[in-house]
Image (tube, rainbow, N blue to C red):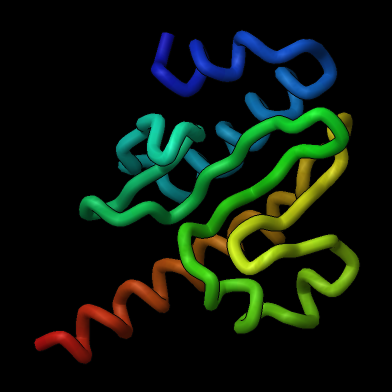
Length: 120
């Protein structure tokens, strides 16, 4: 069992199943990602950078891109969701779509690449 599966195992249904589904979707896009607990939440890192994360809360689940710029870059795609600067809230009993998860991850990876390119 991975550290994320163990962490998610503490939640009641339906959130546990939704978050395990989210884990599988993220790993479909990032099969080589490091799975860890970062800032107290399940996180997927690539080259040491947080790319995707999630957690369960009393009234919703949240997706975390580990960047305040991802949702700004995807304003039209996330317009139907409640967002904060760092989190996208979604249903306790229904996962985000695979297409949206892929786009969130691709946007974050592009931002990381851009920052790295400017740092050189």
